[in-house]
Length: 191
Image (cartoon, rainbow, N blue to C red; front, side, top):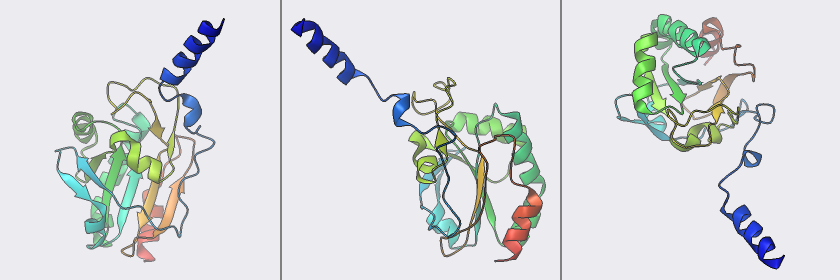
């Protein structure tokens, strides 16, 4: 009996991270407007390093979290952003899109959407965790993601001003609801 107890205890201690340690889609809240944006460095689709701190020296950044190249809603959204990229640039801003997918899958997304802005690899969910948009959907993403937790980001859009503050956000746990280009342009024009 004691032996069974210790064997059970050893098995429990050997279990890797479980779903209980991760947020559900209802628990993730996303960072709020007025919050200082966490700065980070990440690899893009070409394995070049992107530095948010440096990018903010040139102007505001529109940051989009998306689920992956396999998501038709994400692809449509990123294509719409690409179609309006000149208008966003005219307001002095740049665009980045962040996914937990490895660079090879970022490249697939770039080909699907024609994205000319930076697509960034959120290795180990560091960025999406920092922005509180990560949740556990229960889908199997181990081939495309950096670990076996199979988490996803809630599709969200943030505008970060040159002072590093979040000045606008679109955050909706319903993956079908995305930021509208007109809303992004209006928010940028008010900076």
